[in-house]
Image 1 (cartoon, each protein chain N blue to C red):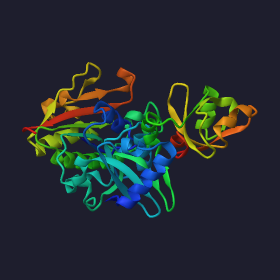
Image 2 (image 1 turned 180 degrees about the vertical axis):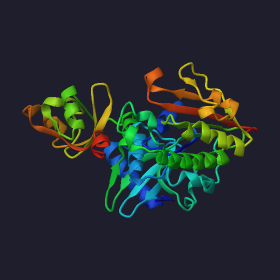
Image 3 (image 1 turned 90 degrees about the horizontal axis):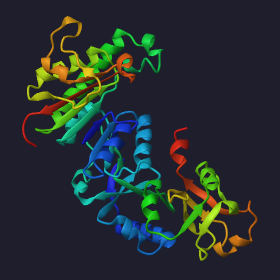
Image 4 (image 1 turned 180 degrees about the horizontal axis):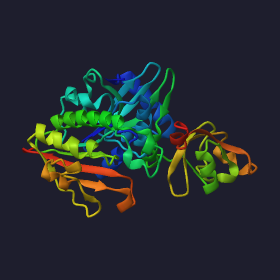
Amino acid sequence: LKPEFLDPIEWESIIEAIDREFGQGITKKLLGKLTPVALIDRNWRTIYLIPTAWMDLLIEEAPTGFDYHLIGKQLGVTTKDSFRLSLQILPELAQMTTKILTVSKKGAESFTYGRSILKESVIYLDFNLQRNQRVLVMDKDFNCLGIASLALDANRVGRLQPDDLVGKNLVDIGWFIRRLG
Amino acid sequence: VFDLAAAPGGKTTHIAQQMQNSGKILAIEMDRLRITSLESNILRCGVTNAIVLRGDAKKIEKLNLKPDRILLDAPCSGEGLIPLDPTRKTSKSMADIRFCATREDELLDAAVTALAPGGTIVYSTCSIAPEENEYVVDEILKRHPDMKIAPIPLEFGTPGYSEPFGVSLDESLILTKRFLPHLHGSEGFFICKMKKEGSS
């Protein structure tokens, strides 16, 4: 895999994708003093944030016989038409955004097994969030468990039955185990 | 910091924790499948100061870098794991130990060559065979007179052997540490810390 600096158009599209879901200026905060680079595989580009001081090392291709697989802080992955946030960046993102869904202990356990979130598990959800909004799923101790997509407007959650769907599981930290299973 | 033969990343992530995610760790691993678990552990533990390279650690001089610290937890025969996996007692032969010892010598030689003057290297194996431990280090000390064994400030463990099987090796090998299942209740393990003369 070869490291490559991002062109401004691609970086703008990533900023737009993250800020649209989690709030204006969030990507800038995540970036801080780091520089975005991509590791390119055939079908996707993994975006990393690296200290500027690393650029000298990474600007050249890896020496013969060596291949870069991971560099610094993983922001996410771009495929043909979408950008997916990395699980590694979520705890940091959780400190910056209000798009959060807090779940009970039982809900947290189910979610990390890949299940979606039912009404009975919801402890806190911002009243103003709309259907299809991406939210960070947090447990009661404010550990970030993954990302969910709201199945309905948040102001309608109160009318649901306990076993009705509130958030669809998009990605969760159980993936770290499942991917190697 | 270089971490050679880094997968599955337990030591890489611990080093990153000790460094508080500052500086830079180059984690090098050759096995494509094991790199997946290395990456996974680095991401899971929130390590942000690591670069993972797939390649043969015996060729690290091609990277043209002079690391201040190197950890080489070398691929070994795994003799020290017999208490956990008794099949290793019969599944490994002397030929396996010789094969591992040769590879360990090549890896350690490459690592010592790449190390910056004044730098520190830790060589470890989960084998208790002197052929994979003291003999390998002794050869390196002969080939690299600028390398000196440094004491390990641990009360735990026993000193390494300077005369295994009655063969006299470098006396400073008693500064290395051995952990033995029947004495320490741990896996069998060997650790040697060496410093390169000069100032970084």
